[in-house]
Amino acid sequence: MVKAMGDSELLEQIRELIQNSGKSRYVISKQTGISQSQLSKVMAGKAGLSIEAAEVLLDNLGFEIHVKKKRKA
Image 1 (cartoon, rainbow, N blue to C red):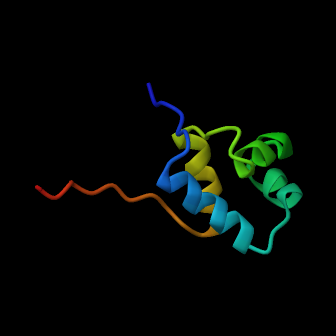
Image 2: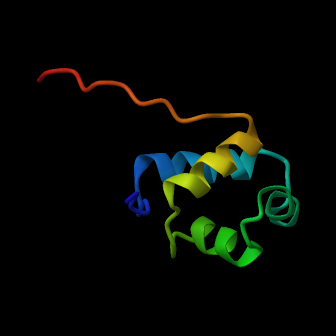
Image 3: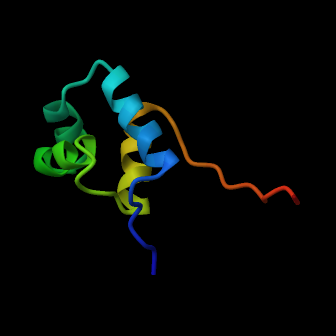
């Protein structure tokens, strides 16, 4: 089971990418299937995203998630 992301560094980066994309939330909503209401909540910091939704949003904006091994402290 994949948990939803709360307020995290990744979520903040996604918010910035949406703001800087030049696309309206309406357009992003139509292209991704994520409701305008959900996008508004995410942008306001009142909701998180599932990993799947984050991947869809990032793909729409021309980005992708990469996972790498943590460095030892």
